[in-house]
Structure formats: structure tokens, C-alpha cells
Amino acid sequence: MRAVSSSCASTSVDRAPLARSRGDAALQRSRRHRASARANVRAGARADPFADPVPRRTDVPDVTWRTTVEIGAGKRSDAFEGDALEIRAFGGEDVGEVAKLLLESGMQGFPTERRTLEVYLTNAIGAFPYGTYLVGTLRGEIVATVGVSFTQETRRKFSSLAPPSDGGYLSDLTVAVDKRGAGLGAAMLKGAESFARAMKSEEMWLHVALKKPGVIALYKDHGYTLGGVDPGLFGWRGRLLLKRKMSID
View: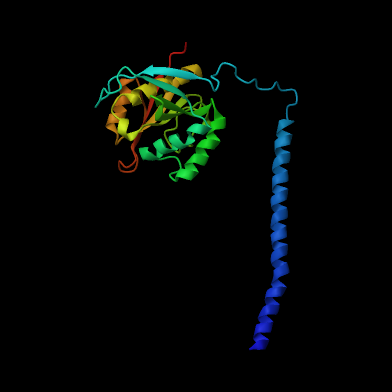
């Protein structure tokens, strides 16, 4: 028995350098791959040394952007009719409230674990103004949010029914559960469109699930028309692509 044990121990010792050498080789390959990638990036940057740099746009909103929308009567309540909804881009201090609203909405397309979603939102702050979440504040409380994006890089990837890459895109419009049906969603939509105009976007696009006729009616009442249909699989997860022309000031 001792001889077998000794033989096994010897075998495990003999294999250790081999495992380390394989690990070292994999590490070296990984380092070479990263170095090659960096070299390719640098080579691409030098491909046209006389090209003019892409100028930074100066005709877009800055972080101080704000708008106020008067709330109209809702489908189920006029409790906030005539009140002002203050709308602005979210910041680090708003991440927790925005995450709460999105998780309560039950919508799909973003992380469903609270901490992961907060990390996702925190990373999105730096995309402003080309992609951001707007928040609506009523009487000092964040009661609604909506996502807006204006480049492909700041929105989800779509396997079908994708909006144009140069159009504005609206997503994740949601209102606090206890304040729904009181006109806040419509007011938030107007705020998102105001931001789109400030971004000089000529069109706003959005997706809406076929199983939500009330939400479809909201958008159609605000001038959105059909841009495409994805019936889903046997009617499951079907959706519409809606669009609206923006009047640019």
C-alpha cells in the first residue's frame, strides 16, 4: 500500500511542472493576442495620418438639460392634472431609483438582479447625451423613467425589426406602480421627444409588445405610426416597431 501511495504522490509531483508550463504557455498566448490587438488599433489609427479629426458636436444638450411638462388627465385618474413633471437626465445619485422602477416594470432586455442592473446603469451614465435614461420628478420624487439613444453603440442589439441606426430610439418607459394611469407616462413621452429635438433627431422609434394594447394606444394617440411588425413565434413575444417624425426647431 505504501508503495502505491508513494507512486501516486510521485506521479502528481511530476505532473505539476507540466500543468504550470501549459498555464504559462496559455498566458503567453493571451499576452501576445492582446499586444497584437493593440498594435492593430495603433496601425488603424495611423492608416490616414492626414485625416481631419472628427469634431465634437456642440449642438447637443449638456448635463444641465432640463424640461418641464404639464401633466394632463390620465386614463384612470386626474390626480396630477395641471402639475409639472420635471424631466432631466439621470446621474449617479439616481441609479437606485431608476433600477427600482425598471425592476418593478417587469420589462425584459436588461439585468433582472438589482446589483447587476445598478452596475449596468452606472456604466451607462458616461454615454450621455448619445444614450441616457431620463427621470421624471414630481413633488421631489422620481416617479418615471425612460431610455433614449441616438447611436447603435448606445442601444441593444436587435436580431429583427431593428430601428435605423441614425434615428432616435426610445425604450423602457415606465411609471411607479402606484401612480400609473394618471398621465405621467404621456408626460414622460413628451419629455423624451423634447430631448430628441434637442439632439436634432428627425425621427423617434420604439418597440412595443403586441400584448399591450393600452401602451400601443398611448403611442398612437401621440402620433406614432407603424414601422414594422414582428409576429413572434406563434404569437408569443410579438411586437411592433413604431415611429414618429420629430419637428426640429
